[in-house]
Amino acid sequence: MLSTGLPQGSVPRLERPGPLRDRVYEALLELITTRALQPGQHLVESELAGHLGVSRQPVREALQRLNTEGWVDLRPAQGAFVHEPTEEEADQLLTVRTLLEAEAARLAAVNADDAGVAALEDLCAEGEGAVAADDVDAAVALNARFHAKIMDLAGNAVLAELAAQVDRRVRWYYTPVARQRGGQSWVEHRDLIAAVADHDEQRATRLMREHTEHTRRSYHERAQS
Image 1 (cartoon, rainbow, N blue to C red):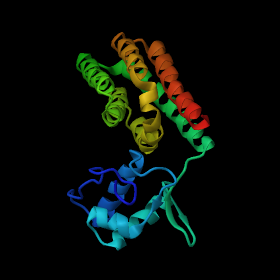
Image 2: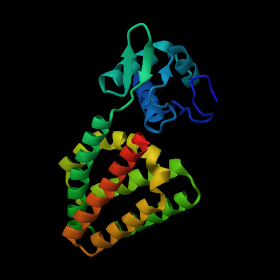
Image 3: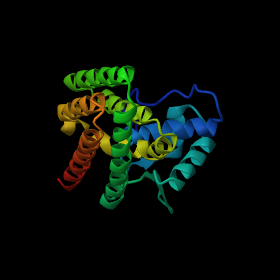
């Protein structure tokens, strides 16, 4: 365990092209989203810079940007801390997610072809395998890919753009309940695939609404326990 609480091997490599400050921002955001950096955790510039192999300046710039976007809190005389989402924040975002995803499921039921359905089935099989292996990180990533594929099959660029704006926060909220949701989440995915394959708009909409509502309730139950 590193001094900032980062698990060994969790620090991403900064090998992608682009401005260094942007790569540091993306690396820190990924660490927050996956909860390698936990809500409420103190973020020390010098330690983060050491882990990422950069100077403190791009780390400082990244933390300021993350603060503007609500991922990090900058407290006078105390420093930077990973933001701790309130119940209201989570509820509002997950409610918006339900609206977006339900419409995406409806459109996917209209537009999906056999290849699209097969892609969903492949992702579902991978997700079930991750749950069986108790690989939470893989299950979270595959869950995001499954929902992204539904959005892709919907074929609505504006809807996809709106969903992309909330996707990372959805992952942030989903990660701590992924094990709790476990196999049931993928059972719900299977039911949704069947509705999409049958081109049943109403059933796909209802199942996606119920599916995302289950995740919202699981998050609140965990927060209250």
